Length: 143
Image (cartoon, rainbow, N blue to C red; front, side, top):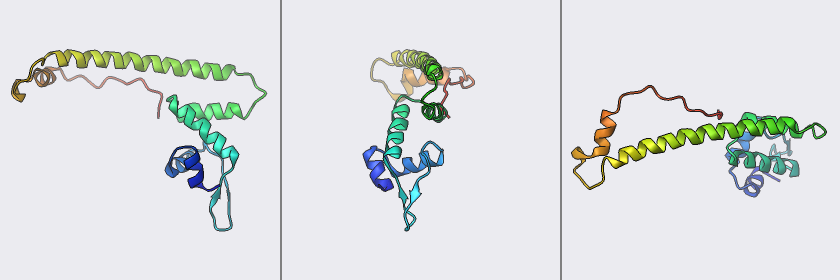
C-alpha cells in the first residue's frame, strides 16, 4: 500500500507517517520502480502500536524502548513494567502540577464575581499584582 492508504487506515496524516519514519520508529520501506514507498501489514501494525502509545502520552524514547523490547519476544516483560511504572509516575507529577495550576486559576477567578469595567477587573488586578516568579520547572518526560 502507498503512504496515503497507510495514513488513512491508521487515521493519521501522511506527514505523521513520514515523521515517524524520520524518527526511526517505523522501519524502512521498499520502493517501487517509480520510487514510491510501499508499506505492508508490518508497517500498519507498528504504526497502530505507535499511535496507541502516543494516545497514552508516551514519549518517542519510551516508544522506541517498547519497540525494541517487542523485537525480543522471548525476553521477560520486567523492563516493560518498569517503563510503565515510570510513565505513571510522570503522569502523577503532571496531575499534581495541573491541580496546583487549577487552584491558582480558581483563586484569581474568585476576585471577579460580578461584571465590572475592565480597569476594575479583579482577575486583571490579581495578575498584575502577582510577584514575578521564575517559571516553575514543568515535570515532563516528553521531548
